[in-house]
Image 1 (cartoon, one colour):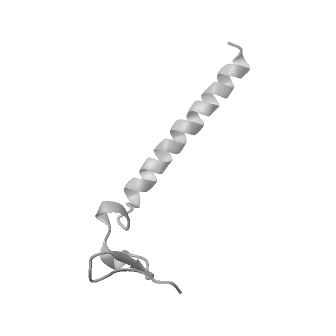
Image 2 (tube, one colour; image 1 turned 90 degrees about the horizontal axis):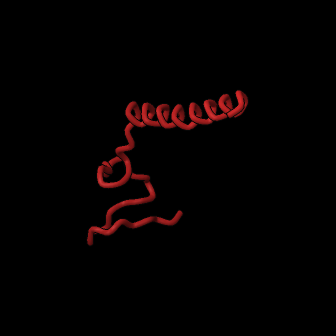
Image 3 (cartoon, helix red, strand yellow; image 1 turned 90 degrees about the vertical axis):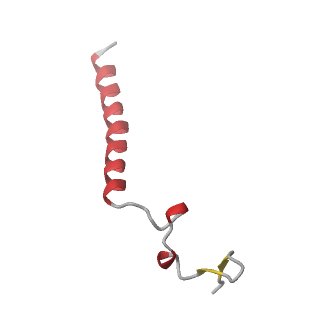
Length: 61
């Protein structure tokens, strides 16, 4: 392998793994508790509320 190829491969590896590390750190510092199974009802979007039958109702504006 040439020196240029090794440098480019190293930069690509750093970019991919660095992006993964930065996104993991961001997710740890700012958890996403407003969606999925861990959703907090008070933090739902104002246009989405639960109906009496338990289903979510998206209000149209």
